[in-house]
Length: 181
Image (tube, rainbow, N blue to C red):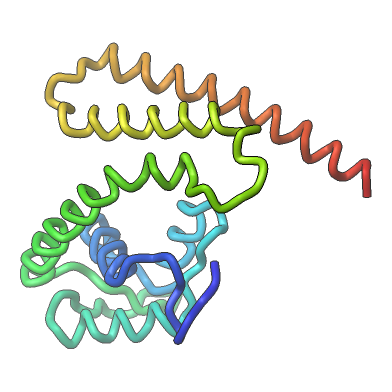
């Protein structure tokens, strides 16, 4: 991911704050642990810098949203969630829901792609299918109460099968690319 003015480009403002509060709601953590979890969850695509994590942790502490716990044997400074942090997170969840709702109509469009590249037609049907899948997935999100356990398992199985098949194609393409070098 690229940066601009010290901020990771492409990430909504407040996302890191939201993620940190959500993580601290689960259990007390240090800045290092938070970075490691985000890096793992994003499969290495995003590793927040110490320059973004530690000022954020200090800000959350100063606002009373978190509290600092006594250092443990490993010497790490851990932070835990406070009642005030819970109230703030609830407000952030409302903003996150609003952002997610806005993205619902944009995501299929972005996946299908804007007509800025040459040779769009080669991949058009696949992108249309992904756009339709995203649209359906978001529709499911609005009707989660009606989703049975069996339906959920069937959806998960279908997506895993599809993902594995696409992964095999990507592996073949990578092998071809490596052979041509």
